[in-house]
Amino acid sequence: MRSWIRILREVPDSILCMVENPSEGVPNLRKFVTEVTAADDGESEDDDEDLNDRIHFLPWEQNPFDHQQRSHSLCNVMLDSHPYKGHTTAQDALYAGVPIVTRSDGNDMPLRVSMSANIVLGLEELNAVGGSVEYENIAIRLGADETWFRSVRERLVETCLRKDPMHPYWDVPRYVENFQKGIKIVWDRFLEGKEADHVEVEEDVHGEGKLGGTMEAELVAREEKRRRMKAKHEQMNDEL
Image (cartoon, rainbow, N blue to C red; front, side, top):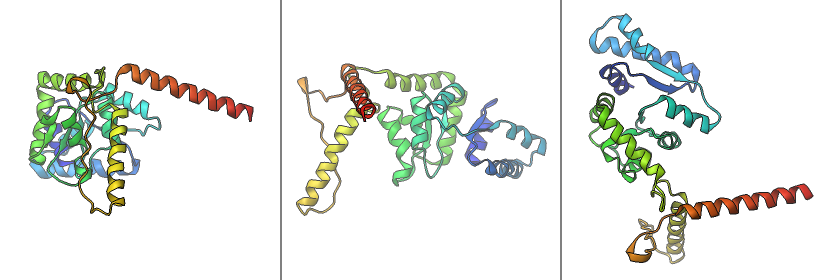
């Protein structure tokens, strides 16, 4: 929260949005902002109230698609929390074309989710390996340097729109296939009585030595198959 306060101060006219969950915590957070701001530089309570006016709490959305649409319409950048990082919320932001600034100075799995996403998406410059100060500086630069911000966001959106094959980050069928291979490797090692070890999945190489990826035609075929199966099940339920 202290980092977010500094970012707010350094980026004029910026606002900070958080989910109001639970609503009972909102007064405590606003009180913390007032106390920290006063302790940092001894400014007046009027200044503290102005800073709180730039912090907005959004109501909880039951429908994730409504939340994603709201993120796209309202937010320019997601400031990842620390030490437990965004998981589902991070994917919601990325899916809406909102880049994520995250601290990556740790080795635990919850600390590395958003960092890994940025690496796969080619946005490593948003990973603050140096800790909180670097994290703040990256966010402040995004807020002050419009050219850089547009470059980052355009690269993110481009990964979402890539076809034939899809970008690896958004290629769910490809991920599922590789994950299944990894689980089978683990199971085979267990049956063979081998000790636990790191698992490396090697993808199949297609023509001209290129790695595979899901093509748009495959997605269309999968969706058509899903719809046929759904219609068949609905017909069977009606007959019952």
